[in-house]
Image: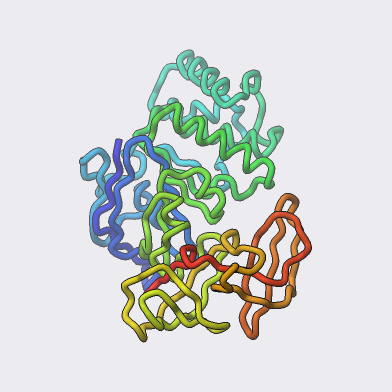
Length: 341
């Protein structure tokens, strides 16, 4: 089952807020994460796919069939909301089997399928428990089981883990991935958590001001952001304003850095990106890209140490194993990425 979004535009009434000319395809069996700051349009996009909102322009296709005019109930999509949206007066099995009840599946069959669904999400024996007696993680599992019990064409997740504590979020990430692979179902996962997106998704779409800025696999998105805004948003970054001095050097606020050969014209303005984990401690033997500064901030993070080293009016952020002798750092030319937007 594939989801195609073709030239979709939607604006909320009497505003210029919404999504604009979005094009993407969610492949059969893949997890596509959609990330972006608040107001970027990611939840609006999910509602358009679900049929909760109707686009002003463009089309939504499921397996090649245009479902744009169809309401949510006729699209056969499983949806898990941030609030879980469980019925408090229904037991676990009743909540899970509700989509089957709407489809007039006989009671005995509903009970059987709900019991199987509970076992699949490791909640065997919870059939008669009410939502208020369940933990956040257990409620999340019930919501997932309910979204999948009627064998939907695709699964839509609207920040489903944001209300959970850090430890439980990690556990539920694994659970969602396990179920998604088991059902082999196209999944759109809306999240504000970059770590969640990077660890779970096959591809990630970054949204900004209602538009998709970049759509790529996690490693490509992290290693090769196409704009400075994506570089700032995805992961930690050192991003300096730069001025191209030659085909293999760039001037940044604290000096000139050697780079790998590039095609930017001399004199052009670029962003110079280096991820903190690529900063090396100590001087280069030939003094290339070697920078001395003063450590102004030092954060112990268990197995790694994050530090800010001040050079003039600039700050270099680094990440390294535990050691105390940081005063000189080296930036490998091959780890500097130039961004021209």
